[in-house]
Length: 286
Image 1 (cartoon, helix red, strand yellow):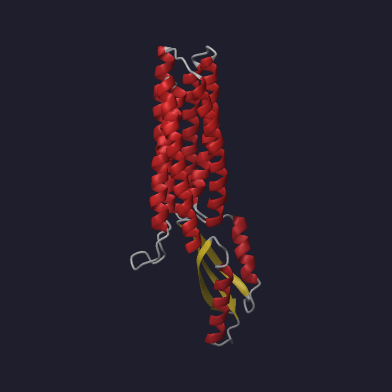
Image 2 (cartoon, rainbow, N blue to C red):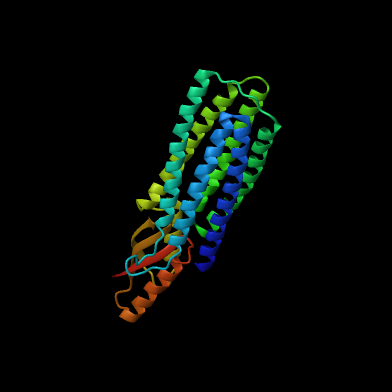
């Protein structure tokens, strides 16, 4: 668990540093060019910074050991961070829509050089690497907040491509392509926020794992020596980890010590799954 906490912490620091660098780069290019699409992308990076800070704090909190007030740990902090990312994405998206419509109505003409185009290409490259890195780390440590960052970084690649097309069109004399690109970017950001929000709300609401994972748990229990049948099983997320409760039937003639040993063996088998934090096994006499 300590290794996972350190890995998640390192990933959040890398994400924060990357987003700060890209924001500075985009902001300079946006000020020099006046491109709405690039301004929107710079604002996007600014919200990425805020989201990275939120994830940084929540990953630190979720890595704390269980205490008297939180006997099952602080894992719900990470879905909260993912939800913050979703809210920021929604606010950003609607703000860009407003600015884009105003620019389309005004029909403002801008002059764009080579530097803004170069910035979008650099952004696509860096964000692509970040998306791959966060996806790998998020899956390895089972972190919904870091997986949300991976999803957000991948979307930023497409966002930057839309910005690239908009800037290239404006540079060629099709000036309306810049606010149109800004408008499309906003729609994509809103959709991204929605997807991240739904996933993390499910974690906070304690949803059940999918049926395929439940079957894996059942098969692990059925193979355990001394288990006659699996009478009942329930599982739900506590933050980004799963708690499992089940009733198993054992021979009623077994001693309490023997029945207890079977129950501990079943718990151990279930808790071998990385996604499962705790298993509660009840013994039913058959």
